[in-house]
Length: 278
Image (cartoon, rainbow, N blue to C red; front, side, top):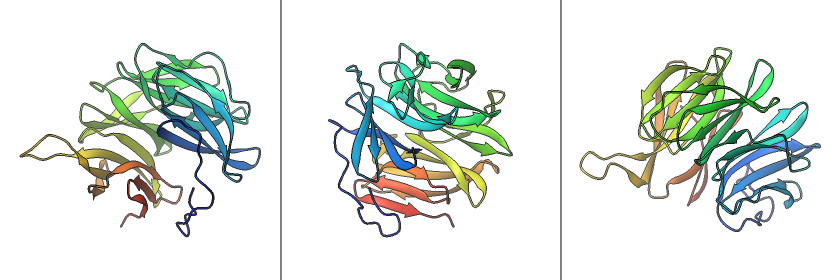
């Protein structure tokens, strides 16, 4: 854990997962900042960031990793949504680490990604699987609200933000497209061609909604994908066009996120970089 102002560590590394951490989300629990991590060891773990220690654990699947984790608020209490290789998406009470209700998704294929939003005053989740459309789920009722149908193949990246006052989802699929969806109607607003994104982030930069896709570089005279060199592309969601890109070299990025202040955080084998848009 780093101090963003100085770039220096503020505590010892958070240790406990047996294998790689695939995803991370933050929340506030009883007035203290916490993190939730998704591990290849089949667990999601809760960490007190002030104390630098683990305070809870959810999920022990034995059948594969937890691919994604996201936090939101349901009925005034912080909750966690996990997406896993066991074909489920699940809802958890962050304070007790106990599952709420039945599985949000029960599938025969891996659930790869999850994002949350607020629709009509109620929290929802958007999930993607190996096969089939993306699911839009009412978290309070633990039931589906609709499907996002259009991608041809696996969708690894899902993010949400607000466009013209309405909640939207941004997705990146193996069909080499980025797609933008109206979550109220579950209709596709538009799509744009892009190399198959590994991940998608969304948020506001200077008050404008943007998305960031992370994808491998493509060379005309060689292999289709060069995984050792990746492209972070910033999309202006209002103008529906690319707004800039960063070509990442051999120390390719492992993850990226947009901060509330509109900065792009990029983690890689070489460390953590903070980028601003010009």
